[in-house]
Image 1 (cartoon, one colour):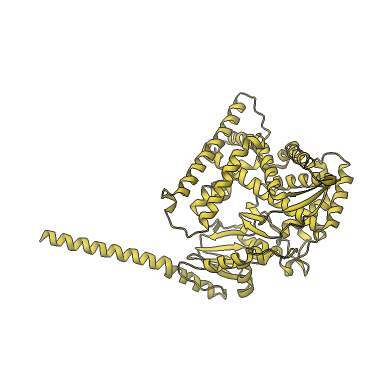
Image 2: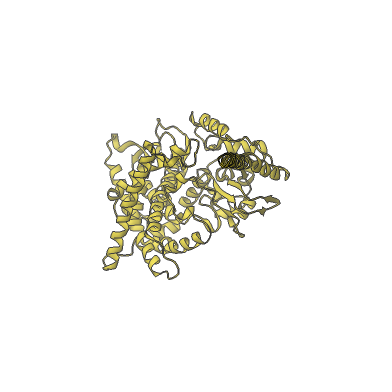
Amino acid sequence: MDCHFSSLFLIASLFLLFLYGAARVFYSIWWRPKQLEKHLKMQGISGTPYRPLIADMKEFVKLISEAWSKPMNLNHQIVSRVDPFTLKNVNTYGKISMCWNGTTPRLIVKNPELMKEILSNKQGHFGKPYLNPLILILTKGITTLEGEDWSRRRRTLNPAFHLEKLKEMLPVFSTSCNQMIEQWKRKPGPQGTFVLDIWPEFQRLSADVISKAAFGSSYEEGKRIFELLKELMTLVIEAMQTLYIPGFRFVPTKKNLRRKKLDKEIRSMVRNLIESKEDSMIVGEGKVDNLLGILLQANKENNNYHMTMEEVIEECKQFYLAGQETTSSLLTWTVIVLAMHPDWQEKARLEILEICKGEEPDFEALAHFKIINMITMEVLRLYPPAIAHYQHAYKETRIGHISLPAGVDVTLPTLLIHHDPELWGNDAEEFRPERFSEGVSRASKSSLAFFPFGWGPRTCIGQNFALIEAKIALAKILQNFSFKLSPSYIHAPYTVMTLQPQHGAEIEFNRI
């Protein structure tokens, strides 16, 4: 009798457990998504219909695959190639529209005023979307933090990126650029003419600069870390393009084991750099003249908050990744665009020759670069390194007239806003640096329409670092070379973390 009762109890328990599991699955896969969809639709927000599990992934992959399968004409109308899914959604459903990221509705907000409300985040209701754990293996630095954790970390990091500190690093930027220029001058070619794929060249340059400026080491010493990070990034991106299965990253597959090994090796090498810098600072031999030294000193002097070794390691990985990708993207597209527009190339060269008079561009010279600054801003508008910014509503809130429930992702489509004729005029798809002649705030019909490095309190902390490096490199290139597109150049911008040339960027250079 007892045995029979126990069996019935076990069966009943398993049945209840099954019902509970089924209810949870039903709630997460159907009930909650449909309730969120209903809430948004009742406010007049249209978008793609919810499809369990596959959501919009099939359509997204289809549009991206079609767009990236062929190059485009030699112009700046890049939105339909780079971000065809968002463009189609906005064109079909409006500037405030909805799509789906798995079971999560994603609100696309192509409106600068609403964008300001979201990024200012005065009530603290918005944060970064839930990150795929695979992303966190690349870095758990400041860009992944929220709330008080982010505030404390930002205060500790701020001194390293202060303009006065960056000014002291100008010789480092110049040294790396000079080494690249000298290598280019030795390239074989008739009458000083040669062809280079500038994408890997600028990746090497920015890697060299970040190694020296952040850690005081040369690119050759930091080369191994960059190689490992690049391989890890490739494996992470590859995994993210497949269906995410919770816990699968722990299965000992060949690629999972490789990712784990790469992470361990990178962390070990970065830890050695940090410990070496700490030891030299303790005995008074290490100057506080690089980002790591400034960070360690600020961390030591902060009585309220101290970063652990693991946290410092994560920020160093962030230095490497963000410092290289953003600047190399900006420099690559700037040279490509100036090769397409030789009149502006010549205007920039004449300005540099007049201001620098054959000397090294110093901080004062950078402050007087008006044409260079206009060109840089216009390239960032047309070819922003990050094509969108992403947020998540963790609490119910309001933006403008919209009541936004908790659990909704938000996409701020930087690329689409930067190319919007309603904000920039009918020539929005054209390269016209003069639109920035009176500054960023007057370049468009909205002072909020330009945000290549984000906006508000979470504006990219490395913005000035990237701009100074890019302007020095551009000045040195223009002092020594004229250039044009190689006949083999293929215009095909696409995104892999940042906006990149899919088939490289071959440029023909001529010694001046």
